[in-house]
Image 1 (cartoon, rainbow, N blue to C red):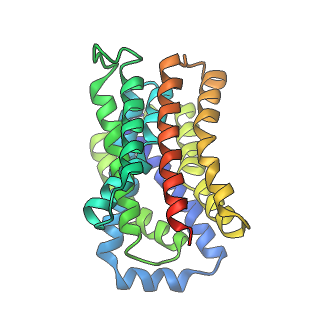
Image 2 (cartoon, rainbow, N blue to C red):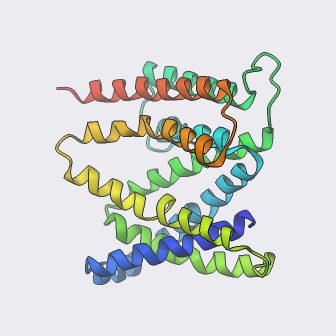
Length: 266
């Protein structure tokens, strides 16, 4: 499957699941009201996520081993602080700069597979795309702050408006006739768990938890679980440099979080 086909198929699965949840929660009227109020806004959101973001990310996964592309994607939180400073006029303090330095040095370690001094990248274009995807994701969340709509409604509208564009483009530039069942199973899994229902579970956990900080800290465990699954299930080689780089990225995120939590203290 091409990245375009993967995004189209996975987005279709996600849209069906999200629309079903929206229907069960009886948010149809809210859905129509939001679409009438801000059609261009949700079209823009859909162009960013899922269309452009996942096209860029899946192309990065095509060029890089998943064990390298996945840790790079976790720098989106650092990219968010940079974009918030540029577009929301938020200040970047010392700890944010430290987080950036640690995170992007971790990127350099992963991208060069530990050969930092030689600056020999495993795939420069793949690394570039992986980093671009983090800024796209950060930009998506910054745009989200401008509209206080229900999360499920927002996702249904974003995916729903992007889907016709994806379908038309994929039938023009792709051939759907020779895709094996394994390909369909893989994109269905991505659409269901990567792009759809997992996000809803996360929102539910954040809403029902008595201590949201403990829940949000689970983000620091997930990349290591992902690497373990990639090694055990898929059989990918996990380079020591990937683990070192990932730990630098996670440490940078921890530094950033400590700064954020202290700033909230009275």
